[in-house]
Image 1 (cartoon, rainbow, N blue to C red):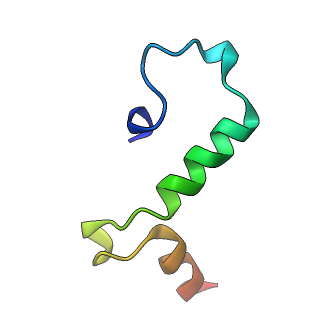
Image 2: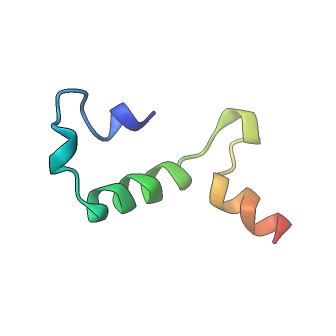
Image 3: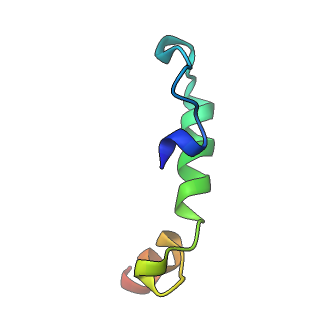
Amino acid sequence: MLHRILPKSIDITTITQAMLDKAADTLNNLPRKVLGYKTPNEMWAQFV
């Protein structure tokens, strides 16, 4: 799923922490069918 945000052709040495943080935030707020169309952040909040 990371390749949806960061293309395969990107040089790994040019990836910044800010880019990784943005990618993680995007993926954690993306609804998933397996989670009943809830986001991973919503599921995490239920158990914490």
